[in-house]
Image (cartoon, rainbow, N blue to C red; front, side, top):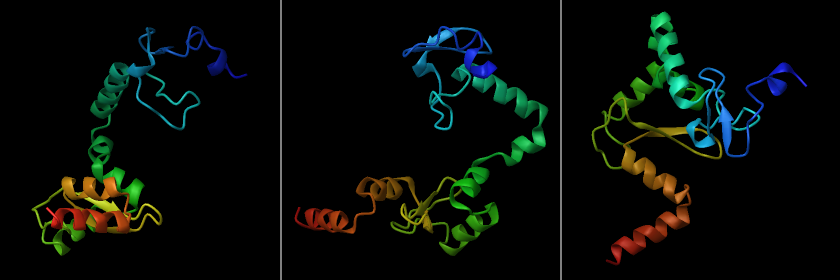
Length: 150
């Protein structure tokens, strides 16, 4: 096994606790962010150390930090650039594609969960509503019938 699986910071890790290699403290696993790609499913560092490390990096790399934003996340998750997102806002008159409520940079990128194809921009409430229905058209129809019946 490699040094990272046998190192001193891995000794003492249990089902309920993990040692942070930065502060050296043994902490509950709930004090670490989830990290799917890691073997134990948790970030390497505890949340306070992780935040501190990121803040220091941002201070040392201001130009990179500036571009490392929500726009970067949208590019990674949905394949749309900042410019494409801004054009979508313009095309929708800065309004939610469902309820027409005014939206801006905080708008959710609505996409098909099967194909990952971007459909438009939604306000938080509409996005949560669709997400709750899991894009199931029959369930949405039943919800409409239910609301009409009230």
